[in-house]
Length: 435
Image (cartoon, rainbow, N blue to C red; front, side):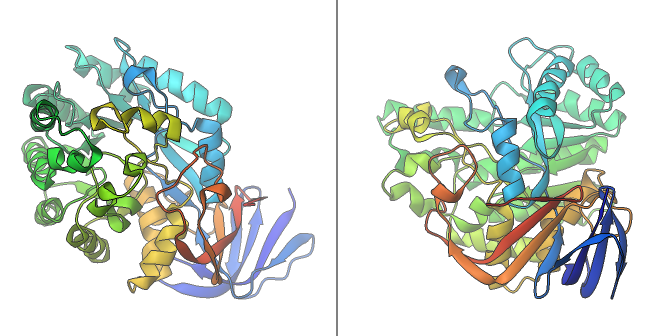
């Protein structure tokens, strides 16, 4: 394979930014030096540009089946194409069980589909949906096949504390990682029933069924279980100031392994959206919170309490969302985001005095360390996979759904001004068109 030489760029490392050249060969980074001159190399000038490691989105949903057999609008092909355009070169999807399907069978089925369609690197988490008596056996089978990460939804009212205890014990035994959606499903179920009985089914009432404390008490529960059994836990899409405070306290305990993520929509969008026209299009779970929660989450990123920004990418078309236009219980919850993660965070993070290393670490370096992809992924160093983003901070544009590759006909960020632009994406040493 011909060498590719990137000249005169500002390379973003985890702790600094340096003006150096990068030489790429055979899908990897061969050399990093202040000045490289090599024959038989294709030279690309990246003067005044920043070179960041390719993004790693550890929380996405492709081909997700929800209520009434509805399927989200991105499959592994369109979702991975969207990922690459936005500078995400590796994503993690979920292998969720169909009814009565084992974890391992679901994993193999989903992996086969992703392998056939994905245009970039991917990994899968095993998604626990069936409350089976043999959950210990199923998890053990997956681990023997190399699966190390599992997700459980506390927002499912069928996931009781006894079942949760068993999951914590078995995953701790095998030193896996448990990803947890933290909302108390019984409380959500009760609150939703009350609002339905009162005929308060319009979208503006939706966040009232899932107030901040619904997340916080679940976070406190899983931290206590992690403390008891030594289970490594990863709390997905943190949304509240109170939840953040619980995680901050837990992370001060040396015996606990607790990590957490949030998403751009919980950093940038707030509950006022539910009072606007067509707000049902942009509903997800948990709901958007207050501006004070937004602010707290940004501070949590700066302080290192939350180490990852992912997307929970799960888009649905307008036609699919319209089924819940007047009844939030009929909505398919989820919004897109994999394509806009890096652009939004670079634009909005710098507005909040974050530097490119800090932002890149949230999207690349930290995910690679937590989910065992380092040093091949998530960092720019000799021997690493040549997954790179070439970024021009001097360009700006208005984000519009018409420019997105993701198979979705709307975006919650329609019309947002994005400062800076991803000009090129390099995946395994090959330049990928972002047009």
